[in-house]
Image (tube, rainbow, N blue to C red; front, side, top):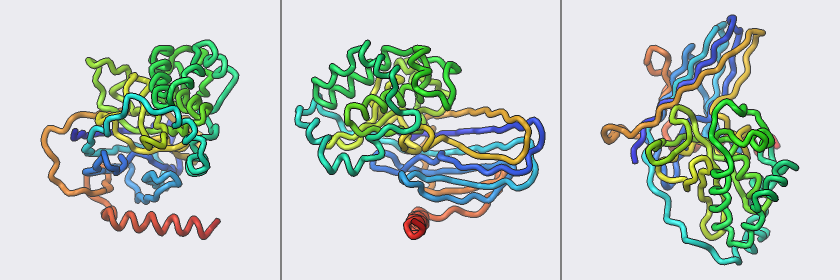
Length: 329
């Protein structure tokens, strides 16, 4: 499936601010089932953009707008070709629980097994698990348990924007009985980790099918969870829509929770109040994209700024960046 994505982020300031420094996690990943055809980043006011790979392997873009400004507009355009993931078995053998407890899995996926940020166990979460009988799912094999967990979260909570915030703990969605994709992903991750199943947060986009039953907002970014099972490796589950992650899902970044991979994050100098607005469009491409893979940075007029490195050059930059990090430790 060939998808075209446009993601517009606008910051409006009540008075001019002196400087803005931003980081972006908006570039779709390159993987076996996801081919990045193009990625274009347009900034207004214009700024020089740099990139690096974070500790989870995500592409991060950062820039500084040093001159005074009362608004900042970030437009990211992507073309991505996705493929369906491999079909999963109906179930796994019960020995998968023992394999999850192996030293290799516990060591290799340490970050995705321990509580972190928004994805952590709380008294309210334990009460919810007891009330809904979720711990009884562990009598099944891990794959079946995770499938049923995703279905249970979908059935227990309504989808409604505005009930929670980006920085809301999971207790807020548990109390309200409703929330958005970010909240449901955090719930699923926290429970999986409590079971000893490595789980990570995925930030990206969804080509929404409202007629097919999708609840998520088609004009927003999307989030879901991936779990690691030794027999299947990483597999994605979307508890917001009660589906497994497939070719309609576009992955941008993975982390321990939302705080690791927000679409944008930054600071500015000034005392003015800020207002954020976001618009997302994900649609099927009208024709095949024949243009070679590229990364480009543009100013608001559409004139190209410094050409981004080729894939091989970018990989080399990322390797050198990791080496520099290791030398500084």
